[in-house]
Length: 293
Image (cartoon, rainbow, N blue to C red; front, side):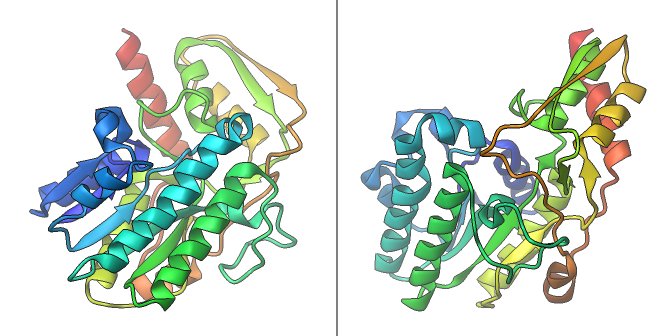
């Protein structure tokens, strides 16, 4: 049995469905299912760990702006709960393996592109620092005898039920209904990865972790950079109604560039991103437009 925290989130719901389709018994754990599934609750986590062979820890305050607005909640959810989870895993007999989901935000604004996993971790915002600190706690658990691995995500997209303010979702929604595409920092460049690709990578990392393989941190990223201005143009070209692009400067706490080096994932897991951004954006616009009709 595998415990998935954050099981009702963007990645969690797709991962759980994939694992269950493959015959894996999954224990879903998510605050959206009720207050008894809060990662900040030590007793709830301890109960959820009973009988599991592995943990995929996705639960987090996952939006940069939310973390800036409530740093205390971010620390409690992303850092303190991770520390509790690591401690509980170490106490289990037998110990489950643990996969920790981190983020491109740990690098801050990198000195070079593409970013390699061994580049410095210099986060510039509350969320990025919480993920860096979570990585450190998990690494300490590994040093203490816990098995598992760390992966880092980058601008995952592809679910029509995603948070409305995520950039791909926001642009696709505007294109599906017509209206205004609000573009903050048009020159900002990011590495967009489909949720299906990320789930494939996680499944491969689960297999490696279950086999006892201890790997260095791994990007699940495409290695392709796209500016937000280019993304807005792609969305506008696929719009179902008239759209206008309004561009404004970005906030100081937001990372302005990330493209991940995918070679380690390919070398160690045989994983390469397959999704095409244009096709993925078209599918998402189609799903959102169909939901409105």
